[in-house]
Length: 152
Image (cartoon, rainbow, N blue to C red; front, side, top):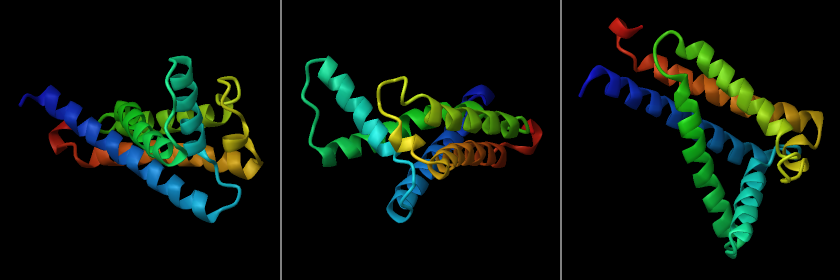
């Protein structure tokens, strides 16, 4: 395997770590904190809306929730993998995480998904931003940690 392919796989591992971190933390916090963001609800609404526009019937809520979580992990893995590897992974991960956090708060309303799941209170907004920001830092940490010393 060449060096470029290896770096891509390492970046993807970091992205997967960041995405899994965000999803597990979100699913835990939403069960414990009343004002927690409900990014899962936004995902369910997005899938349901897309399926209806395509003329398909969305699945029941339990299955739709599972689809939303899988979709979150896949899309966030790809997104966070852009943090890459090496020393520069830190600033890229921070920027990616902050951008995702801002998007999580600012975009659902204009996209027709509703504002309440991520924008209900200041606490909800702060947690939504924080979850995604931390996901970027986790991706950067893993990307950096698995980079060989000669590539740093």
